[in-house]
Picture 1 (cartoon, helix red, strand yellow):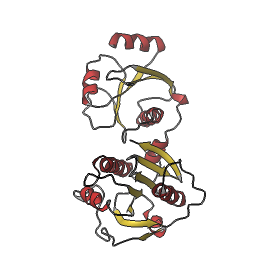
Picture 2: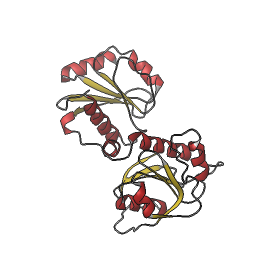
Picture 3: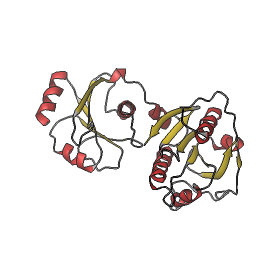
Picture 4: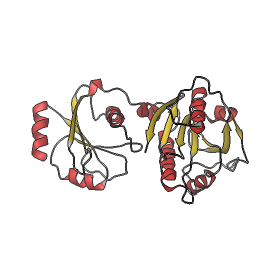
Length: 266
């Protein structure tokens, strides 16, 4: 593979190659490749030596979106110059790298997720953490049963105005942060009951058990999604917040912004 890649790269004048990897085993393989311009892209925390490493905020299922995010992150970090051709290398239905894609960086559209994490007022680390928590909750469930949940991140003052309590607020004036030790397990317990979690852009836990009392006029979401997703889309249309929704039926995590579905995650 190494010689074949070098031949392709040289013939096309490629300076940088983005390898999209799944974990440690792929990284070990890449570290044995003696070639210039390797850029490693993954969604796990990895100790990458001798090559730039781009950590995706989560496992972005949509390949085009993952590429766009990685390219724009490379541009921000100065790895790419915006006027070059690159090679992206993937694994498609295989345990080995078997898919090559050539791209002109100047033609790569900005990623919706990149805009969400890099441009919006909410802390990117907070959004990534909440997405990871929702994925984990979907995977584990509660007491062996699937569970649904809504996390509203950012613009919390307006979100509170467009919502009302269903029950007592366990986070009232306790100044907890979503990333604090112990909060993750508390959130999983509270997720069993109805209502949305409200989290500030800095990760402060504002409230739980909130009914999102906001107009659904003009909201259009994909068929098959229910009231939880309509409420999430509606609150993001009427505020600057981001909604991260775990579906109880298909166990997917979906992200809404400006009243629209941005992406869904298995």
